[in-house]
Image (cartoon, rainbow, N blue to C red):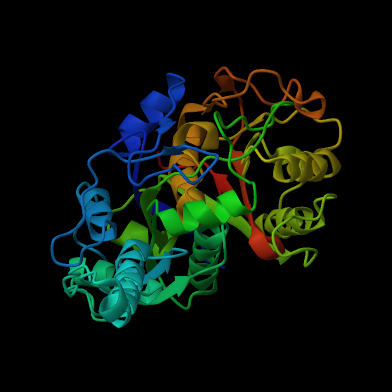
Length: 404
């Protein structure tokens, strides 16, 4: 099996224009969660999210997603290996374009209704101009934009597996490279804030009305965020041939589904435990070799308790520090795993876990494991986990490389 190297990475979030700024502000204990300006929150009990400021719609597409991708690739290598292919992850793609179409369709219906009433009411129908956007957005359309940026003819595949999407995209890429079927894959992930998604989470009562508090005994919901990440994965053989060095090595990966509920995870963490055990098995590691954990940590009652249960069974009495970045960056949905992987590389290299922002009083079962302060750790392996609606769970094991 080929060793899988991560040789390039980039990220943009509501906390930073690039990986370095996001990392430094995480260490400083800052949060990007603030009152939402993108759209009116009057109908909703929650008014906060982690919004990228001044993320303007692209004039050609009327979507903010291409603007976000341009920010992402601004500091990313433009020259990819000749054999490189793409694997992407996004839940809703350019959902803001869809919202424009919905609004126009609603306006047209209202106008038609007013025309029918005009003879009796004497009112003139409001003049709604025809919209210039005619194509419905699809997640694969985003892949086309990425391919075009790198002058690739094939947009590859796009993974849509709830909030574990980009973790599964990285797992799929790692599997292909490890098996020898491919030697270079660019994994990208991107998600923007939209009223459509915000309304959906609000209807589930899953949003916090104030502060996202992962693993806190007073946690009361998640805060949505937006962001993007890109990671170039290569086989060690091909990377060495091209003179590239590893930022980190993907040693193991695992995916599992608990199939318990449409939105809630199994409270015993059975799906997450299975995904983690598969990752450990693939890496050829015992659980005690894990030095730190980047948890999904959404700040919801069910997710956080499920993760604690899974980690307790996996690691027993061994103290393995873990943290969540969602109190600072918000929950970036399909892009979460990729953004967290970029930052986990920083954690491994510096042997530091950023503070869990929003945490005030750790849940009793998370005490001494999660902290609102920076945590130091010592070891070569970090576990990263993500879970999503439909009971999907994914895990990655990152390792330091010998050529740093």
